[in-house]
Length: 356
Image (cartoon, rainbow, N blue to C red; front, side, top):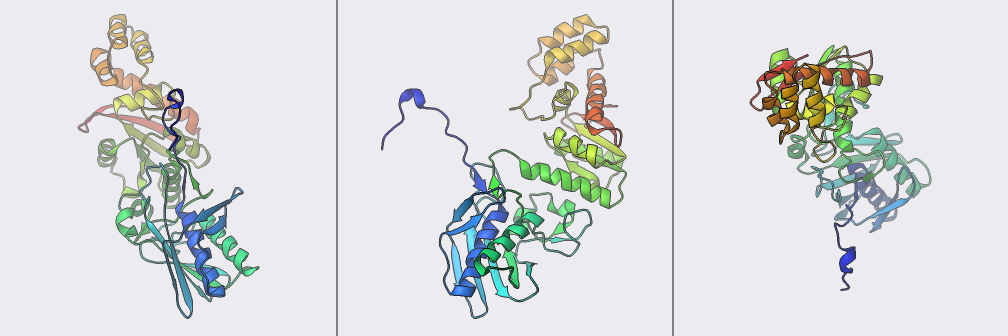
């Protein structure tokens, strides 16, 4: 094997993967082709929504008298996707009117308004449905009458690690994907879940929701505010993903809860709070101290090794409260006038340090 020259060594590019919807489309197309021709195409090639094609190798194929089943193993590339390695299995049989869908093992059912599917429908999102219909049409030459049953063995257990129970998707995973392609660390699925959480809250008529950066701040916010589970948004690092969506889909009152360091990033104007994409700005924190009239505290803060150390160094300046106020102003500017935003700064054991 030929090695790259030393000056070309370096981290390899992150590998893209395939959405659950793309895998289900491939399995559905292979199954329907076998149902109509008696042969499973392997690999099976599908069309992607934004152009181009993708080929998938089958992990399973079975042909019955009135049905056919094919399966694909999901490859999410280098994205930390909970469904990476899952078996996406699709059975197709003739029947119905047009292409209709059923939830098999491990695929959830919608039980709450606000999602892009009606209550009682299998949690197979609109774009994967359209992709599957297109794939079956490519085989038949027209939109066929076919019943498509999607299963993800073990999906109920995996769904417990997702937002699905909170969103009212019961019994398993959702079949997602808008492009068919998973871009590594794009975290599109997380932001999608944030948006659906807002949609569900609006559909339920909630006037107050809370978004948190982590589990401790979420527990503190929920117990303090007395909010139901479906009012809680697992925002994580994606403040911008929440606030920009609220600008178009407002909720009267929004509380953002998080640790001092992450909320200090929001206070300084960062909308992505991940440590790889934004840092605690000690000079910004020092400026808050100066504006409060304490120049000595500002000098201590700017030399602090971490955000939490800066918080301690700022005393007696109430730096947590100043950060909360600045974060509120930044968040309000992005969310717009339709949502009133307030901030709750929480320490690592769940004590509220400031509310503004």
